[in-house]
Amino acid sequence: MKFGTKAIHAGVEPDPTTGAIMTPIYQTSTYVQPSPAKHKGYAYARGANPTRTALQKSIAALENGKFGICFSSGMGATDTVIKMLKPGDEVITSNDLYGGSYRMFTRVYEKFGIKFHFLDLTKASNAEQHVNEKTKLFWLETPSNPLMRVIDIQALVVLAKKNNCLVAVDNTFASPFLQNPLDLGADIVMHSVTKYLSGHSDVIMGALVTNDEKLRDELAFITNSCGAVPGPQDCFLVLRGIKTLHLRMERHCQNGRKVAEFLRNHPKVGKVYWPGFPDHPNHEIAKKQMRDFGGMMSFELKVDKLENAVKLMESVKVFSLAESLGGVESLINHPASMTHASIPREERLKNGLTDTLIRLSVGVEDVDDLIEDLDQALKVA
Ligand SMILES: *Cc1c(COP(=O)(O)O)cnc(C)c1O
Image 1 (tube, rainbow, N blue to C red):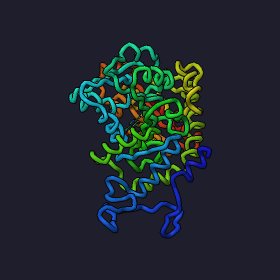
Image 2: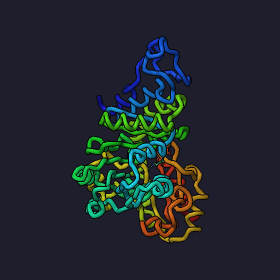
Image 3: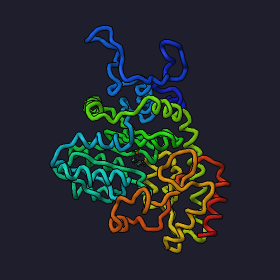
């Protein structure tokens, strides 16, 4: 089945009791059993819920995976992967990471004796220098947030496999429409479902997908033991959102390209970070492993003053100043004080994340209105 057909049909079957074409919201905490040792696959809703089961199948199919597990947030999904490790284990990850992942790794898990190496993974050789017999996991995020660096997933998978390490990829920015890490050899795909999969800025949710049954069993065991599961109402909303994922993504990509080109040609704009530009340092890898380049981008002002960037962000009218991304509406964000505020300033600057960097999540509105809005806000900046 092709992507658009899977987005609408995968995992979803008419309700067996009524024929309802839409999966019902099974708002229940428990299930009545005919006998103590017998049930229909559902015993208690932390373990399983039919609305969630349908969604898990849908997301797994979109990632060309066999097994999906949903969580009450993206961080809940990440947390479950890290809980497979034990004290003394080491993780290779990138230095341009979602702020919340960085915070979890350094402030929650380092004190449990897990060591994280934050490296520039756009060069696989940097990982080679730090991998050793204690390394158990490569945690990759590409395209990265907010600098839109692209990591060669396949090259890192080769290195990880040579060293018996698992590879997990945070595929939130690309969405399964643009990139499928399992096809490139990764063991686990993670999503903040909150973003493109849900697509309407009304749900917090996470997901993991894998093709490996043993891994699925281990991850499902931790999920059921620790309990970060989503409610059925949210699962229903995401099932609904996914039905238009391919349509939304096509428009995000079209609008993204036009906005990126507008910014690049604007006299007040400095660097524009978008992997679709042929002179983006990782453009060739992006072209190889992604189907298109998406609607996420960042830019700096030529006058590198925080007050100018703040003025711009206060002046937009169609864009909304807010955290998050991937919804139908366009958002503007200031990573240094918002999404990435938990990364120490020195660390941030060292990695190229300046005080005036502005991130855009280009939505699916009429692109002329988006460009006009940025144009008037840039006049004020
Ligand atoms: C938002 C986000 C997360 C965290 O997901 P939540 O659903 O907010 O918990 C992780 N990784 C990336 C790249 C994100 O954008």
